[in-house]
Image (cartoon, rainbow over all chains, first blue to last red; front, top):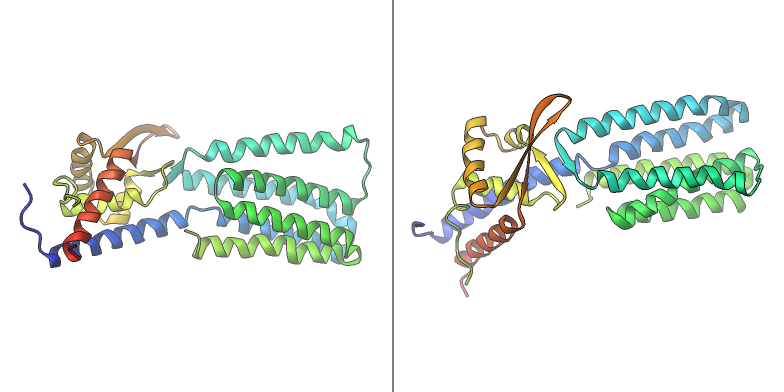
Amino acid sequence: MLPQITPADAAAALAEVETARTAMRRAVRAHRGHYHLWIWGGIWIVMPLSVTLWGEEAARFFGWICAAGWVASMIVGATQCRQIRSSDAGRFSAPLVVVLAFGAIYPFVLRAQPDFRHLYAYIGLVFMQWYVIAGLWMDSYLLWLGLAVTVLILVGLFVFPGIFWLWMAVFGGGSLVLTGFYVRHFWR
Amino acid sequence: MPELDVIIHQPVRLRIMAALTSLGPREQVDFGYLREKLGLTDGNLGSHLRALEDAGYVVVEKTFVERRPKTFLTVSPAGRKAFGTHVAALQAIIKPG
């Protein structure tokens, strides 16, 4: 049996609700994908910028840079899952495996031998395809980010080929980093 | 008119429900992390969670992560509905009619 609740009691209870909700929303926001966007945005800035500065020779370090990115992403993911976990994790990572597997097959089927610039754009588009699929299933910011960066990659490749690498550093990596800040501070 | 829920109305349980309903339907929070966010003790959070679990409002899942026991919590659909009704009842008291 509840005691008589006055409007003041009700207002105090609602204030408590709002405080708890704010604390948890802040915690949830801290578990969104912004760390991953910062990690990969940084990598997407460093890689094309290194080509701009040192030429295609810089590409021999890309494997190591990406490996470091994967390790960092896995550490972040494992740490976050200990606090707030989501059953969407499988829905997020399974399409990545599928998209990467098919993305790796296509060039062989087409017997394509793209130059380095087209290959870099192709790999970027494969990852953006994953963002779009994940965005359709989960957080819609991934959908819009995937579509926007896809357009930016194509524009850089076909409209501004002369400044492609700088374009990719600024608009490819920059888009990921800025979206990370947006997700961290404003999303949901 | 929506009615207040006697189980949820207790202040600590109200805060627990408010926090848990802020998660998405597919998200679960670790017991220790929720305790830290709400500034509660182990015993306090545990006893109120038991009451909420008995009412069918909270789902408690015990598991192992890296061979360490972990408890993850989420709100049930019934709990989400009951909490919504309770908040509506509180709002109705402030603004009757």
